[in-house]
Amino acid sequence: MNNDPFKNVLEQLAEVNSLIKLDEGIYEQLKEPKRLIRVAIPIKMDNGGMKVFVGYRSQFNDARGPFKGGIRFHPGVNESEVKALSAWMTWKCAVVNLPLGGSKGGVIVDPRTLSAGELERLSRGYIRTIYKFLGDNIDVPAPDVYTNSQVMSWMLDEYESIVGHHAPGMITGKPISLGGSEGRGYSTAQGGVYVLEEAMKKIGLDKSAKIAIQGFGNAGSFKAKLLFKDGYKIVATSDSQGAIYNSAGLDVEALDKHKANGASLPAQAGVATFAGGQKIDDIFAVEADILVPAALENSITIDNVDLIKAKLIVELANGPITPVADKILEQKNILVVPDILANAGGVAVSYFEQVQNASNYYWSETEVLKKLKIIMTKAFDEAWEQKVKYNTTLRMGAYALAVERVAEAMKYRG
Image (cartoon, rainbow, N blue to C red; front, side, top):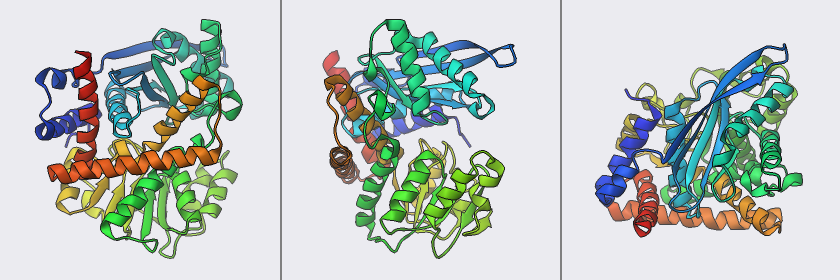
């Protein structure tokens, strides 16, 4: 079993290359990021001591436009992970036809162990170490796992303090008061809803379908709430502390309140302690028509893939299925909407935020959602066309679409 994220990227790239036959030189260039930055970030802790955190920024490809990608604060951050995520960001921007490249950053830390002051100093320290490689026409970060609009605000302020002028477009996922976009907070989930509905049409599912969502964090909880509001039945969900199931459907609004009310006591606020369902051992084993992996990469592996009973999987997380597990799902005729398409709503609205910052003109939430739906449904249709053209999976259809677009830009650049 191989769960090294960047090796997974290379396997996927080799598979799509067998379909679209890339120029040899372009193929070789796409096997490594254009730039990989590793930094040491010394931070003064509240107890007066000094601690050094390790951070990364992988800038994979910028042939189509400035690098774009989130920053995560997580204990599991490593070089292979950020390289893989930056590659997936490159394909993600290309599949929805944004004029952007792909990057990703991270710091090895559990931010839940830091005070607010320590978190702010770490956020600012990270920017100080890499600011020369950032900018609205160079590389534009965004929130990711365990980072949010507050972290982005500190990073923006630090960058502007260094360069000496306002530069709202250098980072996205900002609060509205600092130039953020309407709809950005739930855009990843909303984009996922749009493509889920398109995929359901392809295989004949309707609103009676039972849905399981692995991960009740930012993307997963928003998707659950959006689907619940639209009348869908969410029968199972999970978080880092356990999973819960209700065959009649979970009351997602009540579950969300349960999580919020216990936010200061995480052990008591896990979904498994919610009274509206029964605790289960493994969310992948539940009876559900649709499965939405919305946690971390490599969640579905050769060890648990045979538990899955769903007809449709929509990857809201990045890289949640290993290549080996992906092949098994293909053999089982389970339709998988790949991450580079399914969760591209976040980067699409991040791009909208960049456009609004550049023009200093801001759109309503209705305008944002209208533009997002057009982008997501068009990308799904184009990826499906490639799937049919090459008689392959939807993942490889999306990859063919994305990689060909990147390769074309590289070829024109010479």
